[in-house]
Amino acid sequence: MEFLEITKDLWSYLKDQNRPLVIYGTGDGGDKIIDELGRRGLGRLISGVFASPGFVREGRMFRGFKVESYEDVSSRLEDFIVLVAFGSPLPEVLSYVYSIEKERELYAPDVPVCGGEVFDMEFVMKNKVRLENVWSKLADGDSKRCFADLVNYKLSGKTKYLRDCEVTPDEADSLLGPFPPNASFIDLGAYRGDTLTRFTKMFPGFTSATAVEPERHSFKKLTGCAQGLSIPVTCVNALISDACGKAQITGSRGRGTRASAKDTGHEIDKVTVDSFEDSRNAGFIKFDVEGSEIAALEGARNTVRDQKPQMKIACYHKSADLFEIPEKVFAINDGYKLYMRHTPCIPGWDVDYYFI
Image (tube, rainbow, N blue to C red; front, side, top):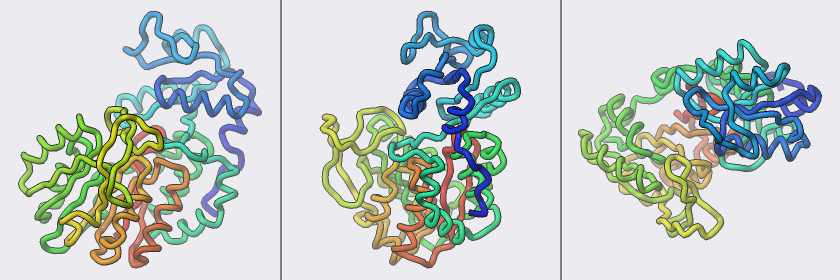
């Protein structure tokens, strides 16, 4: 694999080092990293947890550890490794992380946002052919560099790989367009209307839009946002999927809302892209649906095959997204050119495939 530089993944490296590990961050990311360390027999090395300035509270605990400041941990321990356990695209947060990285050995472990296999060396070797097939389909040098840096980041946890391939959102989205006359925009995972607003301003030729958001608080803000736009927007409070019906969803508030196999007490409608009125003249579809991208593509099969919309698809929720998403799209319509871009964020989130 010509794009592969890393020969030993982060988890194996940490095992060889046998040094104290300190978790930077609490919450879901911290849980996932601590659980993965425990699964690999490295839990005994965890020696502390710290939070960013302003988030340290007297008596606050996380997973049995007192939540300290970076300075407190540094005064207590000497030769420790920092593992970043949260995600952020904010410049001030990234700057603080990089300032620590200048002083300490620091990594941002890649753990799947929506579960499934961890992207380690075993995973890469098992899926070698599929990864190489995607590499061969990437349409430009920037996409190949982004793909290579992302794979090497995921294996190593080294933030330099993310910095090496990042571009601004405007630079990334400049791949899109032009769109056919009277084209519609379908926004899957519309959140509060931020991307809906941005794309309708960037591409004023859209004549209508459909915006889907399952989380009810975000949906309320989305509907308010849509009323202020210059084109008619149909807002749908539902889960995008491969078939219409009903589904259980996680009760979490915000961008983390997704389908659940358990009875959560939170039932919602399931809808497909093919069922939308706007699918008949779809010019562009944005997919950012918390790990349901493959199901959403299946539910957009007729639209992708017949209308050939340009698509921006998040590919960081699951390890297999790197190859399963292109495989799915090309199985439906093999006429696309494939690009990849990453905008600033730690860990390796905000990575998208563009199908043009």
